[in-house]
Length: 229
Ligand SMILES: Nc1ncnc2c1ncn2[C@@H]1O[C@H](COP(=O)(O)OP(=O)(O)O)[C@@H](O)[C@H]1O
Ligand SMILES: [Mg+2]
Image (cartoon, rainbow, N blue to C red; front, side, top):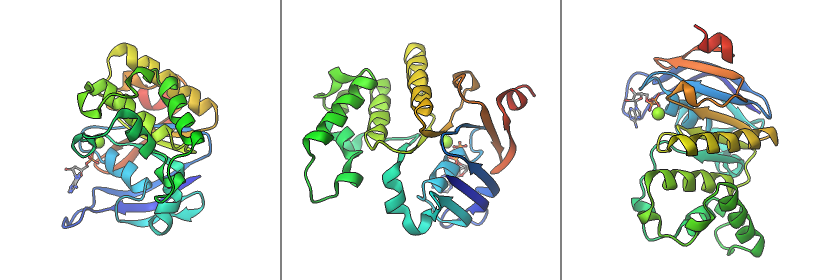
């Protein structure tokens, strides 16, 4: 489903690549967590998989090169970025922001159908934030905003879900709640790649962990093997 071969990503204007020699294969329905210190290249790796950065080597998603077919492929990838600034979204209500998740599927010229609105309603309810539906995005707490960003990604009904530190703004209760929900989606065959900062927030269901440091994969193995030392 996802295949990276000898991948190297260098930011524009920089000389040295931030990630290098990356080889990674992820099968349909897998749940993989990426860990590593600050600056290791975790976010860069996710954005490379999502085709948001220029990279070298092969980045194949659903059998196609994401750098050539990004717009098409991303219709099936839900992405929750690490840093979402709310500025650009300020005049919108929560339900509008979550609806943005469906734009790729709806197309720019069509307006949302009853079915689209139903999906938004179900997604908000699934994440336990139905009551936020009509709130302006600018008036939410960090944790609420994080859940809305997850809702926006899920509203796509994606086959692949990429999450970059999705728990960072959540309290302990919300963490275990959202972690359970991500596990549930994975049980329903959604392929999940998640970056976390704190290893205690890796859900039980995730059995494969990739450790990266200095832009390279140091370990890619079973949970116990990576976390055990
Ligand atoms: N837009 C950018 N331009 C140049 N360098 C960047 C950019 N974004 C990140 N970096 C650098 O790439 C490295 C890896 O960053 P990142 O992928 O965000 O790490 P992580 O998510 O593991 O903390 C860091 O050294 C960071 O400074
Ligand atoms: Mg990061």
